[in-house]
Image 1 (cartoon, helix red, strand yellow):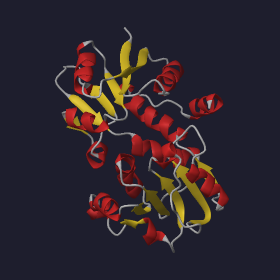
Image 2 (image 1 turned 30 degrees about the horizontal axis):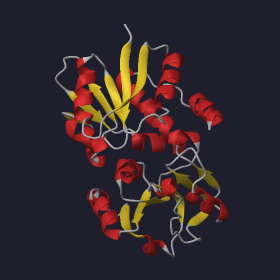
Image 3 (image 1 turned 90 degrees about the vertical axis):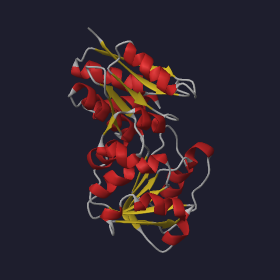
Image 4 (image 1 turned 60 degrees about the vertical axis):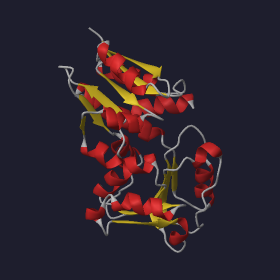
Length: 273
């Protein structure tokens, strides 16, 4: 019998998740179906419970429902607690528990390490932004051994995020974008939504150390951050498509206990861009 899964968001028609999980299923020969479902902005919980009632095994969650998914989960992983957001729900076989996880950080780390070949341990890593995307990846970056600095236009928001990891200080520091004017980093990660609006992030041109990686968590187009990074001599510039596939693979592993190969899926998706 085919096990059913879905991704829930609003809007959702642009989602690549059904294509990704279909490729995972073919590769692993798992008997699953996966679809994109739009929930009303005021009807996320009801839509999830309806899916569970129909026998769905779990679902992914995307904007704007990750915080609601966190509240809906009855059990949460350490990653979900750190992010205060959930992007993967699994329904227990007995129907009583809803397990919540956040695979964004795992996806980012795997993409940087395995696909891009960059070492994070003991590297100076700048995380730009202090919103939901940054919350999802900050702790995994610190746990990977990065010397993490969180910078945001509003310094207080960056400090609030860094304070969540007080036990990891001095590994994690924070401040405003002005505070990094004279510093260089080995990895610079854009976790803001500036790419959607076309805004340029006011970074100093000297922010990139020799051999640095510039990584934008957005995907699908050349963002102002990526253009700036190329112009300022970043050794490698990458978008977040690999992260998208890697976080999906982690969700697939949570549900099915099988870790699919991501490289051929990333390569296939690049051809569609």
